[in-house]
Image (cartoon, rainbow, N blue to C red):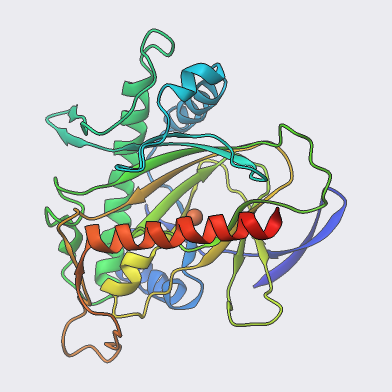
Length: 324
Ligand SMILES: [Fe+2]
């Protein structure tokens, strides 16, 4: 499903994603399509998700407000490596600044905030926290509906992901706001805003503006690797299969290797659906499933997460040293 497109004067290869329409009443049809794409590319669009244009636009307006704050305000809530929350400035030769916050728990219409979150001052950004919390929880609910389709695609009970330790009250979902920027006007033709990686999530729901940037590699073993662009789709979600779903699905649903190439300034908002820290990440396929072939042993999500962050951080440092 590759196509070619001219962008910024360059002829580029584009991968056409399948689209899951959440308004489709034929649940089995949607689940079958999800199964096909999760076995194949591990990435798809979700449309007709019920989130209003106003809330989408508000999410992006608030994201721009955050990154437009003076540097000293952003540095007051610098990323905390104990909890992975807060502001990460662009690192050397990097082109992205990020703000990460946990969803907290929504009860009776009110969010119980996660105490480890680092919010910008309400004096500087009034009502910002409430606005972002609303965006995150509405997106999390879209993720829960996608998860029901995934459960059916895997032959699990439809409410498998509603368990407290999955996407019930104990979930550890986080949201990252991302701003791709090149403040130093680097001159190289292709600049990597984010190196190739898999998401450490069950699924990720990414909203983007209409600027080009995301690339996927469908065969990581190929030499040289072939990278295809994913077209942005405004007010739709791009859904990525993450490494937690890979393990829960007995290694059948594949996470997609992806990266971001910098063409122009762009913003995106990622909601990373995560189970609780105590959730056991293990092959959850029915025992009689023909696709049951996991090679991983069960471990708590917290241990899996800590291990992956150490891994990812080491990889970033290594790449920076190579590039220096
Ligand atoms: Fe990612």
